[in-house]
Image (tube, rainbow, N blue to C red):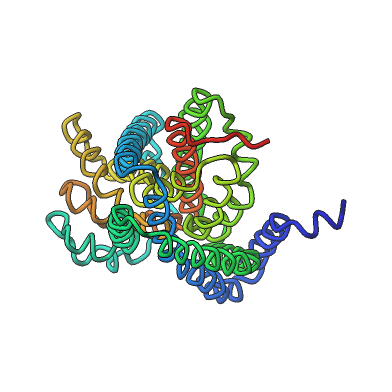
Length: 394
């Protein structure tokens, strides 16, 4: 029993997270220096993201029976993404207005310089810059085009064989890299606690509690009901991806677990083509946790400054966030950048209010990333089942 536990990666990731928290709390200076450890691990994982997204999508499209099926699955996935993320935005706004986390005593707030995020506000969304800065979106488009072209070629057997071999070795390399997950989780948690300290969470505890509770309601309520409709259990699903959730918790990055969650979904019974098409796309278009956080953060800042938002302005915020939230990558801190760009488009809530969020944004990024990865896993199961591309594995 003990040997089995010691060989379990989940055990070592959990131990690493605990050690990271203790180091950051009792030796904050040393904890802050551990930032590079967590960053290096994320950078190594990110090096695999491009090849994995490209290979899985190309093989997924080329491996489907017809391009019509590719289009149907893609359209169904995008429709699902838009409906669920919009629902997440609405839930965030509704709960933030009910609980009013911004109506708190502002004494003790850790003010920091937010100018590096907001010193160059734009009047709108620069679509060219949005595309050029979104590597995942670039790879998605190139992979889809390549997959379609390969699907149209008759004698593509050799090419597909080479791509499958490449995919095999990429995932094999990733398998060995994932043994470093405890190191990455340790570095991420040590830096977080060492940099901000546990005591800095007190002034913004209401906001954090509201965000975490809202995401829990979304996961077990909305996503749980969706899973039940398709005769699946959200609890069983979470149990099967516990290793990935711990990796995300330690690194604050849902991208760190992207390759392994794809493998897990295939093992659960989702077909490889569906996984290869839905999961990478979801990392750009299905960010449920980020959507909840962004909507609650906007309302929170409005409450801090006593800015009244009428129904028309709230609808405008939902519309803007439906676009800007799609640009938030799975890397920690990106949600904060998107929030800054959203506020510049609203032109009503002071940008200086972002300084209130700097102290706790890092802590809430774990909740965002975990909700994002769970949402994408559920989306893949839903699409696979609706397409009859799901084979239950006991």
